[in-house]
Image 1: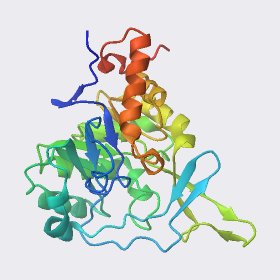
Image 2: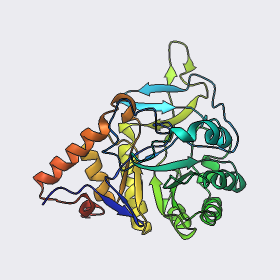
Image 3: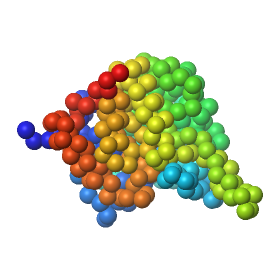
Image 4: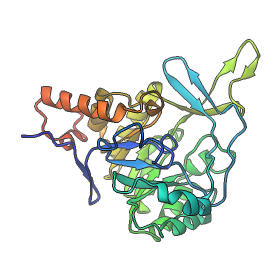
Length: 305
């Protein structure tokens, strides 16, 4: 039997569980000249807001020991109107499924962006970013409030029939209340998880290495945290989970599927290895071949506890 990498989530079939993480793949066109999109089941774009955002002061990114990265980009983006005028034509329509990330400080800002994006016929859905840890407003304050999360999801759900994922924070002490709030409000999937608040110091200069002092921590060191959040969310709600945090090889992907993920978002690894999606999918297929698994979907939630 040929290997089947496809997964189905809420009526949408993805040719593989591999997705790109928001903020690491631009609006989908930047990588077209350097990589094959065939291994990707979908892309999640950089977040869009109702007004342009310049982002945070530099330095905005630094590396950490162990392969991690801390960023303080601050959700810089041209704003939804400029996106519709200048960038929407660059979306890689026809190459893979496309999900637009939306960010806002209020329910009204989320819905205003979504209403404008609903005019694009070729996209598959949205990811609501309610949990960014490196912006002054919104972000963690919204993402940790289950009432606020529910209000945002419910309002957006009422405006679209497209696939709606919700990106939750890793900082809330308990995953189930937030996951359940998003699920009851109409989410089609949960992304687990966003970056962790972190910082680095230049001891010689006695100064922080980021312009905002702290930023969002991602990369391989985040994997154990993300694994736990994915598993906790999968135990709390009957929704597809998009895993995000430290996936850099095929074994990582296999483990996240076992923990309950249906989608696997690749983020920081794309900066170091833009060819990672094809490699990771090959490694996952090789693991499945060694273990007699014909369908990746059969691994979802198969962890023995």
